[in-house]
Amino acid sequence: MELRFFTVETGESLSRLDVFLSRRLQGELSREKIKRRILEGLALVDGQPALQPGRELMAGQKVELGLPEMEAGPQAEDGELQVLYQDEDLAVLNKPAGLSVHPSPGEPSGTLLGRLLAHFPSIAAQGGDRPGLVHRLDKDTSGLMLIALNEGSRLALSTAFADRLPRKEYLAMVYGRPTPSQGAIEAPLGRHSRQKTKMAVLPKGGRPARSDYRTLYGDPSGRFSLLAVRIHTGRTHQIRVHLAHIGHPVIGDGRYAQRPAAARALDVGQLSPAQEEFLRGLVQGQLLHAWQLDFPHPAELMRLGLAARSPSCEVNREAAPLHFTCPPPDRFIQTALSLSGRLQRLVITGNPGCGKSSLLKILQERGLPVWSADQSVARLYEPGEDGWRLIRKRFGSRFITEHAEGGSGPLIDKKALFAAMAADQTLRREVEGLIHPLVLAEQENFFRNLDALPLTAALAAVEMPLYFESRLSTPMSPTCHTGKAGWEEHAVPLVAAVRCPLDIRAQRLRRSRGWSAGMIAQMEGWQWAEEKKYAAADFIVDNSGPPEALAEEADRLVNTLERRRAERRAGLEKKLREICSPAV
Image (cartoon, rainbow, N blue to C red; front, side):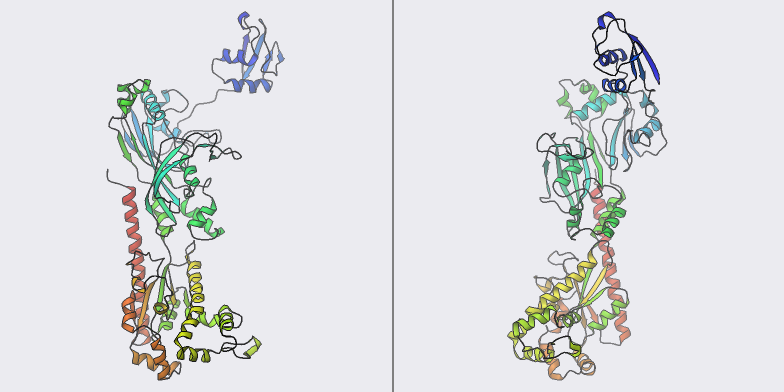
């Protein structure tokens, strides 16, 4: 500790101790720090501790103060810098995420400033304790930073930023899709009332702040959006707080991206531990990037007198600015591709005996998750299940047997129910109206459970014999399954119809199920005509040959779907890269 000694002069009589020391030290130590050292007992008056900063001094008294060791200024440090542009006055950098701009008490080293001093040693001659820096980015924000390489440029650019001459635009990947797709967020910001390291929207007492955003890409499923955000003010954490305020926080922002917003965007009730871990590993930091920067050259600013805040400041707004665009890190693109990778839903349908169940079994053997409407109906008809309850409530004991094997309760008499449905079209439609919504709900739960993050499958198949006839897919026309209405693959399943001639199907039905010619005709009457069904499907799977031929058809179908998925992913990647790297 360094000791300083002073004598109180006649003109300094009755001065406060802290004021006296502040004047004598001439800015070496702030008044607050001097008060702290007095309270710590490091000040002596005439050899005795003086613990009161406001103590009055008398002429001739001897004052002694213990000063802290001089703190070293920022030091040059090894580290890479991605310099995009450099001349004698300035440099433009692409700052990586995870790198603090300048030292702080909790992070005294390992900063951008240390690297700047190593790459540009001459900036150490500039005034202040942050040479070269004229603006800053948050530690976990990447992108464009402007560096002054001499004192004149530093003064000119600092004044330009204070006067909001540079135009700054950021890329932000957020949860959900903002409505409207573009707009202005004007919400005053200030310190959070309870968490002092956070900022918050403060309707009263906050400092004015405005951010304009526009949507560059919105995920069709609503999971995420890529926004361009221009800030008109430079408040701490402004973009992050503003976007969270409108319900679309920046993905990966551990401070302001609340879990409910992520859960809503990912279409789940709440994030499971596995989903949270998936997102943390996927994103690895907030997806916010300083994308574009326009500013007048400091030489032009100095020529026009902006550094001295002359009346010609407004003239500089008309000066042709320098323009820089810096594409975001690749993790932006990879995150978008991962979040857009929805489960491909495949429906297998066809007329009785065509081989739907055989195809489903082959796909299951290939590792695909599968589900069967026939098996769902069988479960719903079991005693006590929802289908059983609805049939019993609507028709009483008409289609219920008195006893069931094993004592599980009365069973539905499926033969009697089928015979009644065959004889009465009105009754058939009524039964279908009771059962089909339950089947649809089970099918939707099957798909949704697979579609939740982290993705457990790229493709899943369901067997639905009356898919077109009962409109179990969507309320839209069943002729629109190929995307004519602009639906994405996650909204409307692709449909594969199994084709097999009626004579072959009839032989199979008589041999495997014991169906009579009358029953076959009855079931055919409940179906669409074969050609109509094939025309409405996305794929035709031929099953008129031996079993090994059907296996080859199944492989061809899966390979086609995988190729289409890869093409869609490649198309999206190309589109996103074009958006993020616009032609200048």
